[in-house]
Image (tube, rainbow, N blue to C red; front, side, top):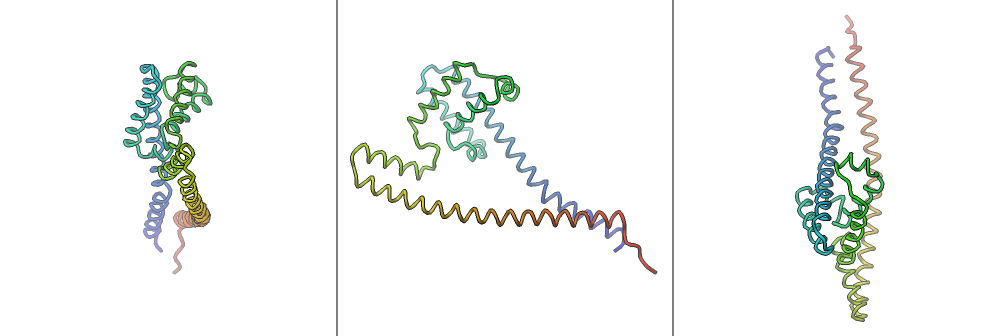
Length: 216
């Protein structure tokens, strides 16, 4: 192998390494930036609603609209926040855990104590109106039907939906077990891939720095 072939091999492996590591990293960073942007816009919109709207029920309606439109604009955010109450709980958690100074540095505004207390109240209103909003609509509907069966003393309806819920939980547990095994295999493959990439990269660099001497 002459020096030009060695350089070409080095370039190819460098491009391969960049493709394997940096493109996924770039996509991940892009996703994080979009999620942060959605979070900033949601937090600011909620603060505006808290300051402008006096009635909690009306505030809940407006926050729900903001959540719907933002998750349409930033689909990545829906993966992190399944519902508006989930988003609000993260909002409250960040305010309390960051502290006023750090939160203000991150988001350029802060909430006073009455606004924090009202945020808690609005979360409770959300949960009373949408008790199953943080789970999928399929299971939410089943739980709503079971609740309705309790309220109306409809034993047959309750038993039917409990059986359906039991079957779905069984399928879900099986899926989780299979996914766990698949993730373990994927992790092993990823680790082996990283090790091989580093080894071949190192060998290429060695060949480039110390090219073999041709005999003759």
